[in-house]
Amino acid sequence: MAEPLNETHDPLLRSWLATANDPGDFPIQNLPFGVFRRKASAEAFRGGVAIGDQVLDLPAANAAGAFDGLAAKAAATCSQPLLNDFMAMGGQARSALRLALSRALRTGSALEPKLRACLVAQEECEHALPAAIGDYTDFYASIHHATAVGALFRPDQPLLPNYKWLPIAYHGRCSSIGVSGQQFHRPRGQLKPPQAEVPLFRPTARLDYELELGVFIGRGNTPGEPIDLGAAEHHLFGLVLLNDWSARDIQAWEYQPLGPFLGKNFATTISPWVVTFEALSPYRCAWTRPAGDPQPLAHLEHGEARARAAFDIRLETWLETARMRETGTAPALLAKTSFRHAYWTLGQLVAHHASNGCNLLPGDLLGTGTQSGPTPEEAGSLLELSHGGKKAILLPNGEARSFLEDGDAVTLRAYCEREGHVRIGFGECAGRVLPALS
Image (tube, rainbow, N blue to C red; front, top):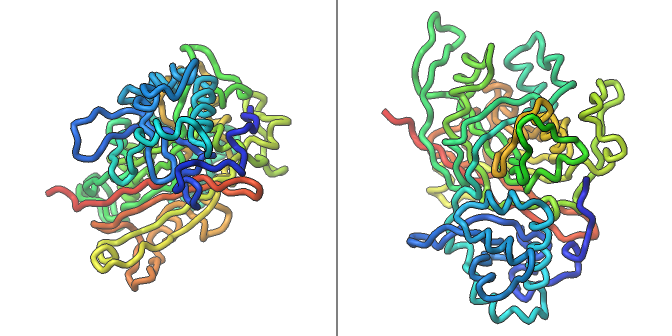
């Protein structure tokens, strides 16, 4: 299941690019992939790799002769404006390119003079979605979030009995997924306040964020072919941050009997850099299931692989209000938690998704669902932090929030750190709420 540690993970590695050796998200041990072009240019989007405060232009580096063999084929595939074909090449091609990049960017590399000309400052770049997302499935992998939200929506039965037996999910909307920096208008919808006799159609008053991770599918499977749990991660390319914006009042009125619809499909934001599973390998941790809970059925049981089936990815949510932006006040940290608390693993999500023969395609996106930890302070949404809007959250500048207001910007951040290894990060997943259209 797990990629073995190799020379690319060596914590002593340093890059000839000085900013890659400073504390930050993108040291040489990370090397995430994305698509970019220079801002306000007519350039085509193409594949790039984040290193320090720069982006290495992969087509330019390949043209400069930085790669050979399988790595060169992979880099050539990254010349396209989308990474679907690169994702479809699988783990061997991805690892070959990652190794070649690591060697080329290290201190002492003979390729330094050529590759310096292939760097573009991140602040000069704009990003597009890294892949054409054919399908988007959002799971519900945090039992702490599921229980807290269930208590608000269904006080008599917060956690439905199937939750502990299979990974719950719904089919999301691809057309409204945007990359970090996305701005969207407050959605309108049908909702029914408790005191109203009939539903109303108006802008949502309970707009929320959801702190999630997104998983990009790499190699797909043919229709009718299940994916064995032991091979599930070989079908995954990497991870991004994901914010599944939610209109809680619209959601509450519509979600039964068929689940989320207009309360969820108006906007979803992801971070631009896809962190590979190989880069995350040092930060694996044990996945456990409480002894009193049902243990997974055979097709979802990791067995001995439980010891490394989870990831300790630290997650944070930051809020910047319009007033903070106007006064130059720093954003407020709302909550932080870790993906290690997830009730279901990434491998289980994939194996369950394909267990009925559903075919997954390169570039498909899976959301983990809101990630909340075991304590109230680790909640991954305002719905939980404000106890369903009953308890306003006081911000450092004196403002208060139960749900998001127009002009609010939410930024998700994530990183991994462990003694004996170099910290790696995901960059930012940022989005801003605009007023509803009249």
